Image (cartoon, rainbow over all chains, first blue to last red; front, side, top):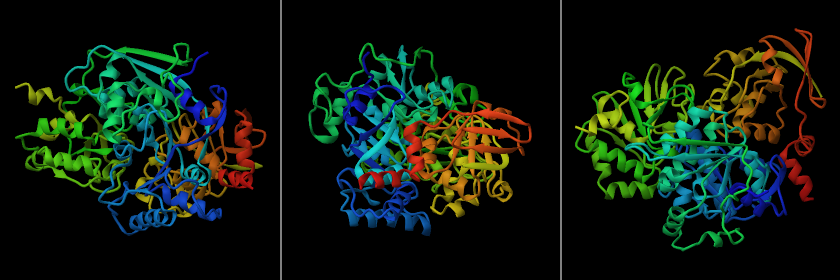
Length: 432
Length: 162
């Protein structure tokens, strides 16, 4: 019996001859990540247990991004805990405001995550990096504290589910729509404790930003990991961010042959969908699985649009939003908040004239932060308000009041909806 | 260890934003977090919990974010154990790592709000004293039992590093 790509990565990190699905293993990690919400708890645990020094200062990344730039005094305290720990432990990859970005956009952009790596992050959306063909998974603060100590993590080897996407994507249909469609089909626990392996001709035609958006939301179906086999698109991206040319067979831990799933690998389930007819998808309150076509939701009026987050705050997301907003004004009374995910993306958006398009349209163009996605700051909803966001969760009270409503979509639908003030298919504005 | 307490019943897919809203993640104190446990979906919950009570829920309990503040809030408000049809993966490991007792039971649906339960954690047996029924649960794998028996992940690692 062969192995899936995810199993091969685990095998390479567990120091074992073989592994079986369902088995508990202890694996060596390549990178451990924490943020201003989860790392303070990990640092406290680490210190309380009497440990003095982290296992490897180069394999820890700390990013204050959730409530940063500090939204209030208590968040400032939490951010300071990260800064102090980074200084004390000489952690190189600590990203202060000014070089900070939303962690799951920042790490790939910095070339810190590579195909074949095993990455844990005390943040559920750590699964984003699977787009690069690595095993990246969300853990808790105590797991992070433990990784600080010995660079290891306990894992139960998950079973894999394969998702094959066939056909050709319609205009305005993106990676975000594919993952929303998938979650709508299988439910918020449809891949509980599983690996979601995305494949098929459609996937390998997607750019990296779309792949990140897909893997990012694997957790919304309950998965441990969302993963895509590295191809030329992946390797071009890696070359661009690291300046190094790599082949699939010189990945850090690969045995030659690279990270591809074996033909006889075991999948618990295989889904195969032709997505040629798929229209932009929208997840309705209050679950990411409550998915409908944007065309069915024309009557939903909105008060706020947020374009950003670790799901859709990348440059191609901003470009598509700018394409729709260029020369237009947003609906009077609506709030449009656009948040580039990193400083690099921010600068690029300024350079390409996107920032000006957003501001002229009546939007807000913010410094990078997770902010409104989790109801932190920079766009909290009050009672009765409705937001359409390119973020990843629409649970009750996610963006503020428990009496508010969050719809999730791709950036094109979000931008078009900002112009009309109701959920709008981009064709409605762009065809005429 | 035997846990005896009154049931607070919840539905399916109870997420970590339900358990503790992000606005409270500026604290790591379980008592403080506990005061806001389940606030968005059941505002009077924390006030009604008596020390030793039990949460019973449907499938996929604890889905969503990785915040360890969620099991800490549950512990902090006085809940002694959680029984659910299934648990989300990160919540599951967080509960193990911090030592919040929990049991997966296919019979969770049969348990009603206000029932009195007696849980034998080691044996994995749930007695419903109100309905005079007994439910079996999936036993904890040996590896996880070891982490729990050493008082959580950090102690487990500490003891092994000696």
